[in-house]
Amino acid sequence: MPQTSTTPGDRSVADHSTGSGPGFSGDADRRSKSESLGERLLGSLIDRAHVLPPRLLAPLLAQEIDAAGGREVTVYLQDYDQEQLRPLPGEGLAVGEPVPVAGTWAGRAFTSDTPVEQRLDDGSTRLFLPMLDGSDRVGVLAFTLPRLDDDRRLAGRLAGLAADMIVTKGMYTDTFFTTRAGRSMSLPAQLQWQLLPPLTMTTPQVAVAGILEPAYHVGGDSFDYALNDHVLDLAIIDAMGHGLDAATMATVAIAAYRHARRDGVDLVDLYREMDTAIAEQFPGRFATAQMGELDTDTGALTWVNAGHPAPMLLRGRRMVGELTGPTTRPVGFGGATPLVQTRQLEPGDRVLFYTDGVVEERLSSGEQFGEDRLIDLLERAGAEGISPPETIRRLSRALMSGRAGQTSDDATLFLLEWTGPDGEDDLRRDLAV
Image (cartoon, rainbow, N blue to C red; front, top):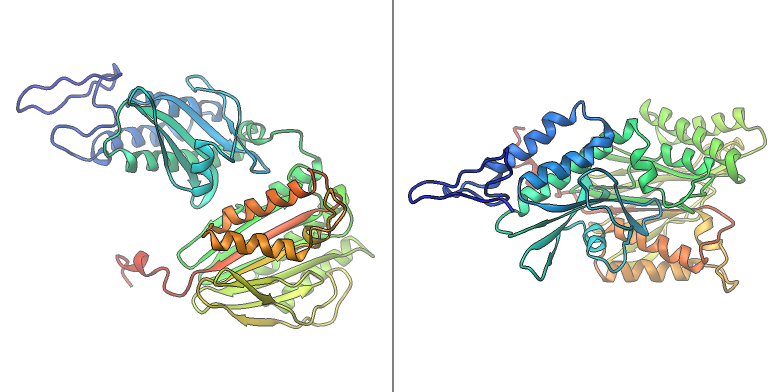
């Protein structure tokens, strides 16, 4: 444990090189950690991370936390079906077995997106800190401190930096993928996961969360979104068939969607570009799709439905109806000019987009999962005040549990929540306009 030397009138002196010092505690002048140890700790990580090989990232975290007085450092990454948190191996890390998300200290931090403190018998505290890349869940950073004063803000910033570093380093290594993968992933599934945006995004005005099932064997389902200025663009895709052919078609559909979106075309022309791309590359085949836009300032939602189930609208966390209306033919079939539909959302409204594999799949009992069961799960999550990311995770787990881990079709869930027009007021307060 780090030691401090103190004389009357003098402040504590930390010898960082020998590991002695105040640890995560402030000095005698009561400066905050962000001004003393925090600057040194976070700065050291940032300075060294630029050229650090990915395999040394977690050991560097452990080394710096140990030098600051922490011990038993564990870096947990979420597995792809979000059932387990899997420890990242590395020198200096306390590497144990994977832990389930449900019913564990680390799982509580992961599902709540908030730090969790476990008081130990020796008087020390084990911190479980959600690692969030922006608002996307990466995993949990855990370590033990001999004492806990006002260290929480520094610890949270450290977990955030760790998440950013893992995401960045993960772009040129397989280490984090292999840690996350609880079992072998099919080639089509790997193709789909590499195509996805972050599974979750939260801003003061809008939040989204999505998931693919079965995570390790998904084929033709996918989704995409982008927040450009005050407009959230979104799409959900279900390509015909299964396996690699379906995954390839979904990849082309998403690529065509992104290409058209980035060219700034409207929803009608966006549909046409996707339709043309699929028809030319996969004659006689098709993909169902929904493409939409949400004005985050006004709450106006517009969309085109090309063969999907109607989205569900929840208001006051209760199902108030489906966003029904005329549909056009799936992309690839050369449909007529699609009808763009519009619905005015109210602050707090949630809209669930999903593919038919969610409700049509048979449970182990032989009955379909069905819309009623999906609505019941949605409303229960709303009544408990559960966030969109955790709502989607629970829906996914309920779906796979009901199917006993077996599936004959892909299933995709994508949840949108509009908070309201004034969500950014606090962020704008200090900005020059």
